[in-house]
Image (tube, rainbow, N blue to C red; front, side, top):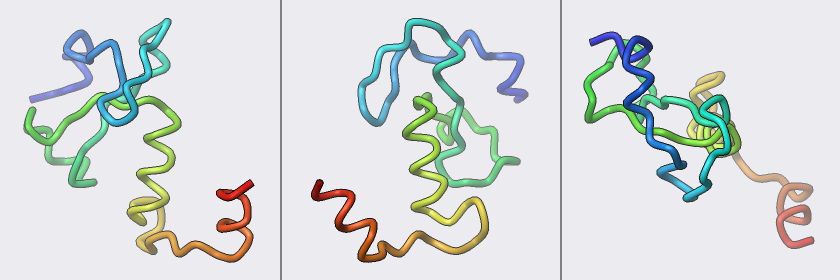
Length: 79
């Protein structure tokens, strides 16, 4: 299954935060398990760019190292 040819299957909202997009470019198709070769429909979800960025960093998909909050991150979250 080539999910890129099936972009029309994307939902119109982020399945993580509920954001409703004004345009489809605001939403991404995400591989839930982080495996970009696993294009099984059950492994794909529609998420907004912000949630996609956070998911990638928090899971370590970008560099293999999961995010560990620092004191600066904790202060930013509580601001």
